[in-house]
Image 1 (cartoon, rainbow, N blue to C red):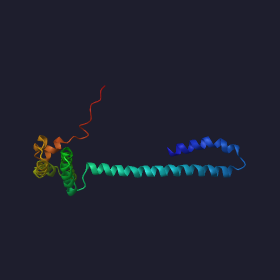
Image 2 (spheres, rainbow, N blue to C red; image 1 turned 30 degrees about the vertical axis):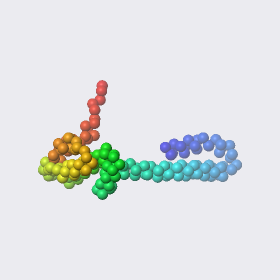
Image 3 (cartoon, helix red, strand yellow; image 1 turned 45 degrees about the vertical axis):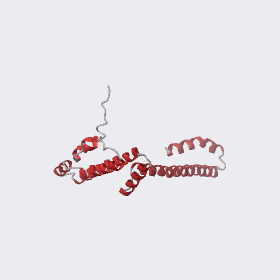
Image 4 (tube, rainbow, N blue to C red; image 1 turned 180 degrees about the horizontal axis):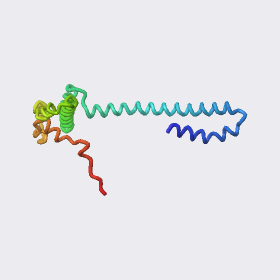
Length: 173
């Protein structure tokens, strides 16, 4: 894209330089200086736009994924006091999901060549995770969703996860 713009500017400006043949070296130098000046301004604008986007990403990350256990607990407590139990529930369930997903992914990575070890993990109970969810739901005075109560093993969780392969719909002809 940069080269296309540069070539088109050269094509547009070349008749003007051909007309002033006496000072062609100084005219061409001024033209290059002008192009470099415009490029520098555009790069500065791009730099500040990207800098602004990093702040947006940081805010989105803080909202979606709490930093650590203490921060998640503090957020749940604060939101519960404010009466925003729906937000508390969202944080609890997202933390539950990300912890299980990370555990499953780490084991898939470790057990890449050993399918027996991976099958053993799929049969392993996830009661430590569901117990924490039940305790947190009791603190906010809500009932644990039935689909979370029904999860007993990592295999149940893996069956529940929607992958990108599940989202491929057949093409209509």
